[in-house]
Image (cartoon, rainbow, N blue to C red; front, side, top):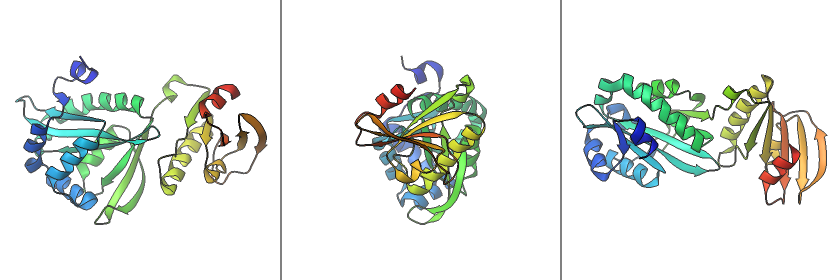
Length: 254
């Protein structure tokens, strides 16, 4: 029995029948978000999410009727794009949903160090859900095929509860655009400013320059170790060129 089946009696893996049932019943705000972001009709959007996502769950009410669907799309480099689409009936089980769903989000954040996506600024239910689950709203921007206002959201795995002395971040911006990369680095830098040492692996010059110290490896050899003035705010960073196994370098340096 899988984790979600064991812990969540009203969750299960999604089927095509669930999608057919939910598509015409989605909330008005969700339909608006789908149209603004993708230009698709609800059934096409649900089917697309079902096919592309690594994990897709359907949420049921006590009458065993589907009320929502959510999933996570693997976009690479430990980043998962999380999404939720629901009917108005979700509010009937909102308290149990929020309580149990947060556990699922925590579980997904062990599979993906970064959970990320965009949410329509008009979709107040989604925004409340994301805030409850601990997502940070890092910027407001025009997004999607209709270029409507969306929030970009992110949730980085909470490894700070164990109070580690050193945090490791292996290519944390590898799958992100330049704007989002700087937002992620700013968040990492704030954690560093709270007294945590952070070790980052990157191949990107601009990311390397957002640090306090650069250890430059080439072919597994330290060729440079210098302190610099940060472009923004960071930490200790390992900057790799022509090195095939970044993880080896991390363990070597620690």
